[in-house]
Amino acid sequence: MTDADIDDYIRRSASSVFHPVGTAAMSCSSSKYGVVDQNLLVKGADGLRIVDASVFVSDAELKMGK
Image (cartoon, rainbow, N blue to C red; front, side, top):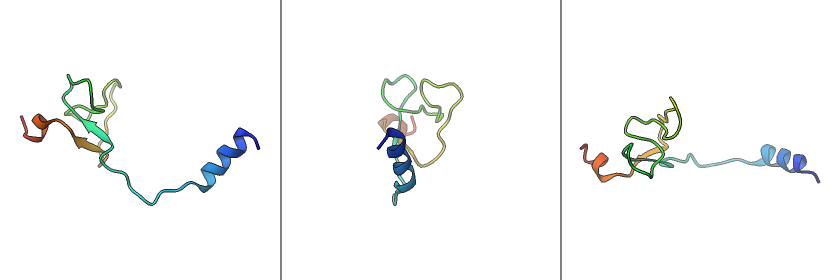
């Protein structure tokens, strides 16, 4: 069995019954952790935003609206 065969099998048979949410942490733009800033811009990428339920707030300051 080749790598291509394995890839093909995985692509044909893999599925998910869950809709993952809360997988991209939001933090202040100056924080070293977090995937997006307060404007939902992906850190380290130009012009890319995440605007769905995968974003969750991880800074107490952001939660409190400061």
